[in-house]
Structure formats: structure tokens, C-alpha cells
Image (cartoon, rainbow, N blue to C red):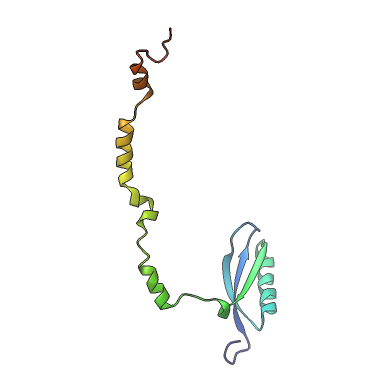
Length: 118
């Protein structure tokens, strides 16, 4: 429980179907997890179809510290994961395609043209 408070903060997540990912919905205040679940369930039953509801006490959620967030900055060099990082490949592919042998050229080596047979 919060320091001196009766209510705890809970985060509510839901799934529309069994195969869809969880989506964050809202926060709510409740005296315990069971009542938080009932309150979340009541909210969804009136509004939209739902396959599953998850209730998580906010204090049980861990987020990154400022120091941990700083470590993400050095991992930000991810151009190799983006298609724009491979822009030079279009030029290389075009050059490769120009040097490829086509069917007409290969058949010309044998002296016969496509469609001509003895």
C-alpha cells in the first residue's frame, strides 16, 4: 500500500482476442487487487468485447533508471537494421543485372535462335 493511503494504484491491460497482444488501457485506484479486477472488469463489460484483462500493481512494475536509459544512447547506431542503410545495394544490383546473361545471349552461343529447332 502507499505510505499512509488506503488505495493502491493498479495498471490495467487487456486483450481483444486470445491472439492479440496486450494493450495498456488505464490506471485505477483500489484498496486491493480483487477489487481492482472487479472495477476493471465492470469498465470493459459495458464498453467493448474483451478476451482477457490483466491487473498489475504499479509498484510491481519496474522501469529503467536514468543511468540505464543512458546506455541506450550508445546502442543507437542501428542503421544496418534500416533499409535506408543499404542504399548502395540498388546501384550494385543494377550493375549485377546488367552483367547477367540473358536467355537470348546464351542461345546465341549454340548458333540457334529461340524457337528454331531442326
